[in-house]
Structures are given as structure tokens and as C-alpha cells.
Image (spheres, rainbow over the protein chains, first blue to last red):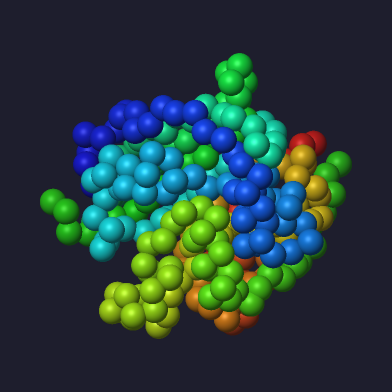
Length: 130
Length: 116
């Protein structure tokens, strides 16, 4: 993982939270309440800017990397087919013991700038990169 | 005063579900969808996406409280979830813990909710 990635903005973009995306999430969760849950938990980690943006931006070695945590802060649920602005930033990269940790934050806001939700994703890269 | 959560179950997680989730988030990392790749990586089979496990835990909460009740969730993932795993979502002091049938914790989720 690249220590110097801290503070880097990986993506600033506008995207549509499509009905199809929410329905696909609903179906994957597969319960009667999944339609509601789907409006809270779309996960764009791999989607925004292409599958490799976060991996390349952090300099992640996928053979040693795991997803260690996910955080959500909700201002409201996503509305089907709304357009939102997203900004993805490397919030922190640090070493603890033999492992490296990287925290990537995705902030979603409506087109007027009002926040919708904030996702934070913590990756751990086990030992070896010195 | 906030409503108390009760224990709920999710799953068993299936390969079809993992594949559907992969499609929903466009995350086709082979460790989730390619059995041979997962075995070469030393795993017994493909594993569920961590965010899918978290989504299932949150779904158990949303089912009880509704989607507007939640302000934040902080999830820590501690063990992989495999196809066939049945998950129990157990209330804790500050959120929920997700456990496998043998009691192994796979995720802890700290929750903040309206009025909490």
C-alpha cells in the first residue's frame, strides 16, 4: 500500500443511482425488507471510476489485501434514479504491527450539495511490504 | 426511548446470492465467484463479499426498525462467510453481531439510530 496516497482524491464524479442497481441489490439480499435496505447500502467501491481505481489509487496488493471494515453515515436513503455527486478520497494509510491499513471514504451528495451518505471502507494488507 | 432489537437469522448464504451481489455492485473479484481461484488461494470455497454480510446484518435491523431509523453503522469484519453459512444477527449493547451457526463471529456492527 502506498503511504503517500493519504489525502489523495481518487474520483470526483456524478452518477445515477439507478432503479436497476437498487433492484439488483434488493434481489441479492433477498428478503421482504430488502427493498428498503437496498436504498441504504449500495456499495460503489468497485464501481466508481472502474474496478481498479481504488486498488491502483491505494497501491493495494490484492494477494495480501482484505476488507476489514465498512462504515455508513446516512443523511437519508438513496432515491431510485436520482443523480448524485461522489467524491472518493484516501482518508488514511497507516502501519500497525506487521500490517498496513488504508481507509477510503466515498461521500455522496445531491446535485445541490446536500449530503446523502458517507461510506468508509477499511482495507488491511497483511505483512510483507517494507 | 429506542426500540429493542431482537435476534434474527439470514441465509443460508448461497452461491447464487454471492453471484447476484457481485452483479449488483460490479465486484467480480474471483475470490467471490471462481471456485478454483478461491481454492488456489487456500480457501475451502468462494467467499461472500464483506459488504454483503454487512448488508444482511443491516437488513435484519431495517426489518425491525425501518430504513429511516438508522444514522450510522460501523462494521468490522472478522471472518469469511462461505456458501451454506447460516447467519444469526444478535443484538449487542451498541448494535449487532453476526455469527455463524457454530457461534463464530463474522462481523460486529456498531449502530447509531434516531433517538438512541
